[in-house]
Image (tube, rainbow, N blue to C red):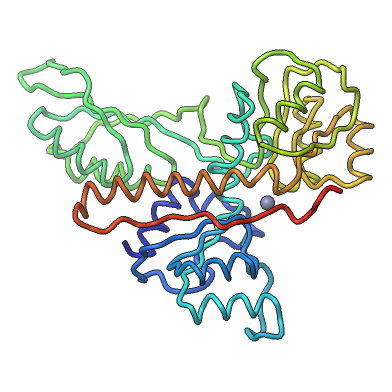
Length: 349
Ligand SMILES: [Zn+2]
């Protein structure tokens, strides 16, 4: 499979439009037409990970945290970022990063699921898309063709009831359509409809815009003590320890979770009215300030709260590439997907 096809699969779960403006996601090194037989997935693009990728003969490396953030003026061995880019390039490894788009597309949802949280919504909305319902009646014999044309424009139509007012049998086609596809879908309806004056209706689905963002806020499975929640986090994320502020005996039923560095999420958790935020990378002053605002912190570490996404991406790509092979490339060789060996940078002594 070509690198760009793998990227296409990744961007189904983590579309680039979900990424924050300051971020730097995408194919950062290498070529997208490379034939990919072996992929490595990691959290960070460190020298250690790149060396593992080279040793394992990997064609493509996918990491969560992007190697390149600020503009680069030279690529040479004297600089640690330049050295990594050089190593990836000379070994013809296509390097792709999925960061805040993965946070919004996968990370927040999956982290909340790991704690059995329900009724969740984004803690900080970074992407919002209005949805519309489009309804059109079309004579029966044109319905199939019109539906197919609408699908090509990103709609998901279904045929409903038959409306026999006159001698013509009209079928009701109904579809939810995103804001970005609305104009295209309407143009397609007009173009493919047999009548000159096409009667269609468009309704905004006001109660369900598609929202994505960083972190999640929602309800725990049942009311529990803060200490019990801390142990649940430790358990589910398979950690040696977590840090905790606040009253261990406090009872909690709603919580916020934001994998990774969560300092900037404190204000969103306070605003959401929860009394606990599960996150990582919280410093002394932020912890004190959060507590003053009635927010306890369970700091489960940056690596600790995010590393599960490596397994998620590996499993997802394994299934997605296998499905694709079965559909199209039934005799193609399998793509091998491996995980880099990584550890949190800190040790506890
Ligand atoms: Zn992170």
